[in-house]
Amino acid sequence: MIIVGIDIGKNSHYFCVLNRGTGEVLVDATSFKNNQNGFDSLIKALEPYDKASVLIGMEDTGHYHFALLRYLLSKGFAVALINPVATDMTRKMQGGISKNDKLDTLTICDVLSSNAHKKSYRILKISKFDYYEQRQLTRHHHNLKEEINVYTNRLQKCIDLVFPEFNSLFKSKYGTVYMNILKTFGSADRIAHADIRSIRKCFEIEGRGKRISLTAEQLKEAAKESVGFASLAEEIQIRHLISQIELMNAQLDEIDKKIEEFSVKTNSPIISIPGISHFSGTSILSELGDIFNYSKPSQIIKVAGVAPYEYESSQYRAEHTAITKKGSKYLRKTLYQIIVPVIQHNEVFKQYYQLKRSQGKSHRCAQGHCIRKLLRVIYHLLTMNQQFDPSLLR
Image 1 (cartoon, rainbow, N blue to C red):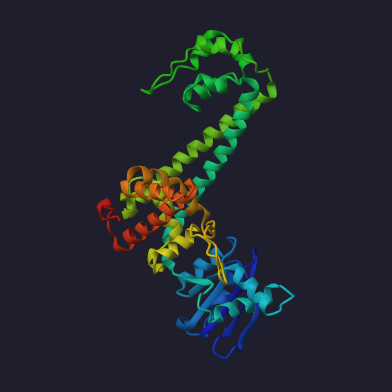
Image 2: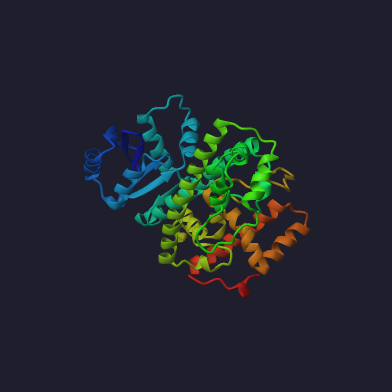
């Protein structure tokens, strides 16, 4: 077999070619640009070798490898993505004290040539990119939600300074009237000195939505008695923060509509599980990729990072260990978000959760057991292309 090791850079990459059988270096480390001409020069250098016997390896790190990876896969090459930890460990085991791009190409070849029982790389197919759009959108959704939380926390800090009683006047936060009042006035002092007619305009909303019980008059009286203080800086921050929150919520709506379109088109069996929405289902599918890359459910549990650590030494075996948290943080986050509604909507999961709690497991630990059970169910549904049937659960 012909092994090609590629060390990825931002503007240029290095590659070398090795004969796995003899260990002979066929092409010394050579640089090529991260552009079309550079990619073409790499393909030309590989022309003397039978494509079916070539395995190309590169580290799975950052995003600079993505364009080259997709290009090589489109040309029909087999490409292996290597865990960066593996190359670092290989370098240290060989006694390497230097690290540079040229040497790293050989280290990557050594990792691919390893006869270890458990390979520290995975070979990709062009079908891997079927989920690229969905994965990018669902990850963007997660990131936007985190940003919105940051901005809402900053907004609450400002409200606590200028009108600490404000939240107690509403049954829920961030509604239309709630935001209109903050955008228009920004502090208790401004509300207390405002004309009642301008305050009433904030309560005027279109549509059939449920109206709040609070009145403009009650709001003004509460503002007059507020212990908040007038602050021009806080008022400006409130307006700006609300603008940011509303913009990101609009972006989130746009993303969610597109995710739902992908989900409806895919029509995956996991959507039939009560508690899994179009977003969460798409997030799980895109993070896992092709389910037939996994030979058993324990592998996707490992990918999600929800498998418990195993620690055993001599006669000692740890009874209580945390989950590994190795793998996709987005997949793990989605699973912990959906496990609550899944437990609520399915009696078998509810009983399983209660069983773990009765065994002394903490709430979070019991959720972890339910998540692993859910992943086993998901694996079965996807591999068998079968709709969810709660009567078949054990």
